[in-house]
Length: 128
Image (tube, rainbow, N blue to C red; front, side, top):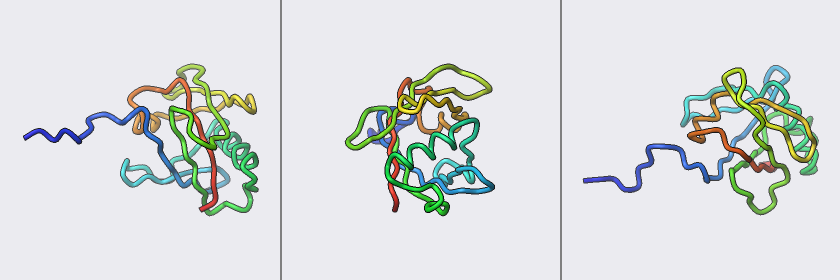
C-alpha cells in the first residue's frame, strides 16, 4: 500500500521554526530531526539575525539562551525581513537582506529544509 502522506523531498513552501542560541560568540541552532547540532550561522548571517532581533524589539543580549526564528519561502503574516538569493558559493548560497542590505551565507544545511536554494526567504524572530 502506498503512503500518500510520506514526503520524499522537503516541502519548499513549508514554514519552519528554529531556536537559535549564542555559542562561542555566534548564533547556532540544533535540529535533532535533521541531525544538526550547534550548526552555526556564519559569514554575515549572525549579523543579519541580530538585525532581525532588533527590528522585532528584541535585544540580542537578552536572548543569548535562545529565541524563535520562523522562516518560509512565502510571505507570512508579521514577517519582518526577507532575504534574496544572490549566488552560489563556497558550497552554500549567498543572500542579501532586503531591509538592511547586508549579505550573508547559508551553508549546505539549507538543503535539509529545501530541495534547492530558495530565491526568497521570509523571516521573523520572537521570544519563547
